[in-house]
Figure 1 (cartoon, rainbow, N blue to C red):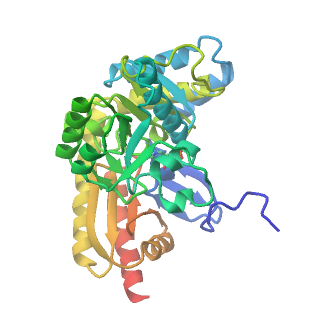
Figure 2 (cartoon, protein in one colour; figure 1 turned 45 degrees about the vertical axis):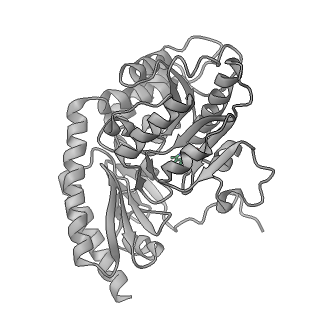
Length: 391
Ligand SMILES: Cc1ncc(COP(=O)(O)O)c(C=O)c1O
């Protein structure tokens, strides 16, 4: 008999009942150190007092009004995002894949309004992940995500990750945009080198097409800058965010320049819940914490400390681990044994990690984890690696 919850996930038999900072408490009382943060969602850990306060204060007053009316919390969050980014304007969604839908629509509408309706094609890369909507799976294009779901949304051209020459060759008079994650998450923590992002920006400018960045996983302080592309000294035309921006409350956004957004006039897009007062009250609290130099400096300090520990771990367990990679607190351990075995051994050591493509385990901790948490993470990973070696 089919379970009452549609069985699209194979779930670990863990049932958490409480979260505190970087820790999760299992129903049986065990305390797990959480280096997954809900897959880069709980950017400020669990039950951060300022987020709890923002959510509960808003809940006392007003949960929801339609986007037919003005929503001051939404306006405030849009103003903060515009102040701290390249963007001139923001549309709020509830998830990363909804942000992908709008990013694709926005790019196509841009060229439609410019009198080039044939420019519909979006160039994407293998190993990418943009969510599970029809546009998201078509953009990623992998068999794993698309098999059985055809006909797929047309208009995507898939290139090999890192193939910049391929981009130049693939651009035609039908191309609207290039869509790329500055650091691939699901694909196995694969950063695009800064120089390549810069080159890509130049290629897009020269061809007169848009650059869309998917910062759903790597954005909102995760890499030690508010947005990952800042490391490369470039800006996109359109950017997708979600996950960390809501700190655990469902919230996403599409940020864009005035030019890129110029086709999106009244009536061209909408969302019942997008930009809801509860979500935006939390989003404002998240931005107030993360969008400041001191906080980001701490992310970078902790990232360096964690990375140094991981380098040591790889050296002392070279039968298990191949290398550390990633950026800031978006780190991956490329495994020599099955990454799923390592994730399981970490569970046994009461540590949460997340598997990714390319036989990698992901470490995506809360950005405010403590130095003690880092020390403990290292100790538990060390135990897990020893267990994998002996099993
Ligand atoms: C880079 C990236 N884009 C898009 C998505 C989809 O986000 P959501 O699951 O919120 O739809 C994800 C989710 O993991 C992601 O990592």
